[in-house]
Image (cartoon, rainbow, N blue to C red; front, side):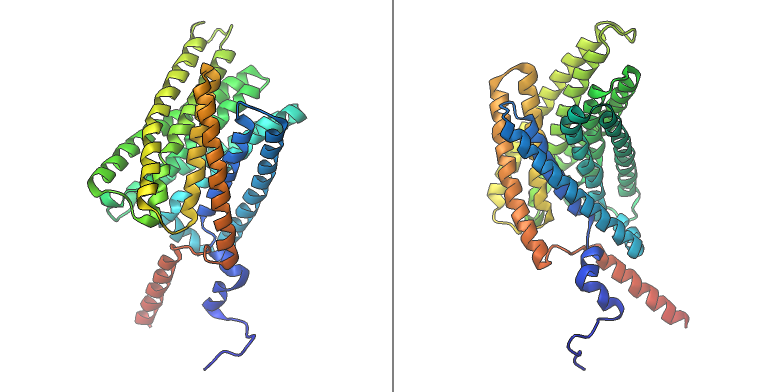
Length: 396
């Protein structure tokens, strides 16, 4: 029988229309939008060739990112409050669950901009607030890195080498990003004890994530060498290796810079410890930048070779990884006082802005049409519901 015009959907069908469909299909991958927007704001604030226009543009992107993060967070909370059964299915999904790491990473970009823009204007209370926000981010990032990595290892199914993707870097990168943000927070803390504790925690976070990310990159390279390029719908993931390498390099150089400042005249370790950590930070950062350069060439070559490919939320993988690599490039330029790094980092920043504009236009169009509100993990929920119904029928 045909449905009456204007009839209100009932039963499971009502979840697939209107705002319920948006909330129910709002996967964690949407937080990649906050990462991409956040890194654009940071880059505009960090470009060596500063002007008032760049500063105000960075503030515009910062405010926009606050709005995006707030909307995404509220929608996500609604999703798991209204449909608590989705959480278990999502966390067990080998791909969808990895995007939970985008939440603390997106939040870290807000903290960094707060440090760069709000702390100089609002003083002591803004500094304390930044520290509190960073502590929350550390808890979330460490939880994501430890829990998702273990869930990946403890699943019953066996993942073959050809199914390994660069997405497995996401939960690991969360602690690396938190480490870089922590170094910036330590730089502004007035209390030396608090600053040293924050710096030490940042170094621990960096050590948790960076070696593990290198190990995953080894596996990923083997997967590419043996099974060749990933499918076209996942081709953008080839940019993801730039994330931990770029922010890892940025983080360690900043940790070294702050360590030199905090350990100067301190009784901790040897008087030479601060300058030594700074020099090591610059050298390690340069090493990671060089390693990232290989992956940057691989990524651009892969995209050119595989184009065209369909748009999906994975396209946001263009922005943040390339953006943090640009940030590391410009930081090296400032510390080494080399024009090459300053200019190259600025060019990469311009490329990130263009990619952001391209991706956000496709995202807005897809969101308006509703085509992007689709969570593949909900198929597993339907299967579980069918299995439960069948079990109940057999018992009856």
